[in-house]
View 1 (cartoon, helix red, strand yellow):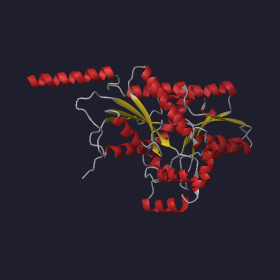
View 2 (cartoon, rainbow, N blue to C red):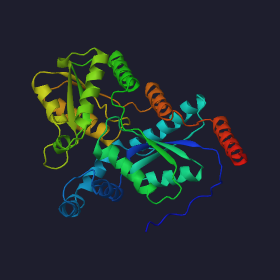
View 3 (tube, rainbow, N blue to C red):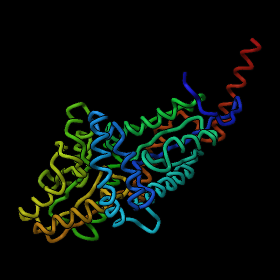
View 4 (tube, rainbow, N blue to C red):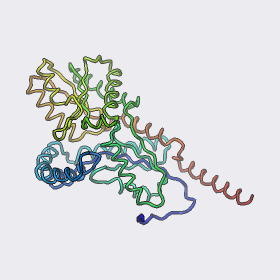
Length: 363
């Protein structure tokens, strides 16, 4: 028998209220080894992230990875930590506030919150808060433009796990992907063009996406194809030929074959082949984080320069760029179509339903 959590107060006939939950991957609470260990344990225990037999992986995780990796990862986090905290959390929080403002200025009276798939604040906690606040309709928006079972589906798993314990469920909608959204592509292009205008243009534009095991592609995950479509559309918008840009994949974990080509070896190969100036962008990340600021702008830069390159330009994520907030807002508005997002609309809808019920009773 299912055990349901206590429900917040509910008034029959209350007006529908709409909310948006913007979800990112997550981050350690601090750059300490202990907090990084807790974060890695939660992240790497997700069967969506690591798809090998559970017992074997438990032994690898707890006997090989967690005793040694957290200290090394903590040093990397420390190198990009800000006075405000984790860059990913800072940018996600800022994006959420700007999204709330964008929607409010256009008459959408909706509550916007952010949540993290791993770490704090959790998806379950934020869904609880929205429900207590009276939300009867919630749009779930991933910070991931390209769909992958390792990220998007895992996020949805967390929503479903929360829903399994709730008796009076709100209506839920999910944004699966927006890898080819015209606004998203335009926002990326304008960010790159601004960098070129200020710093000049490199000989090659490297588009680095987060990697996943190659096996996921063979099993039907669309991530690989969606990354390449994003890259193609972005290159077309920038007027680049196939010889002027390169798609790569970063953040490989373990010895299994992952999507290729790998980012760091590709940067080294470019430098060794005579490319002196390179620009690198990470279109799959909408907030700067460890994978962009440390892995690309520190480690990738070092690898390229040591291999003979002379200029490495990392072009930051969309973060709080106005074009990105515009895209995010328009995306939310389109997916909320048909939902009452204004108090007047909701009240009128509730009143019309009551009138219809009253008329039905008389008849």
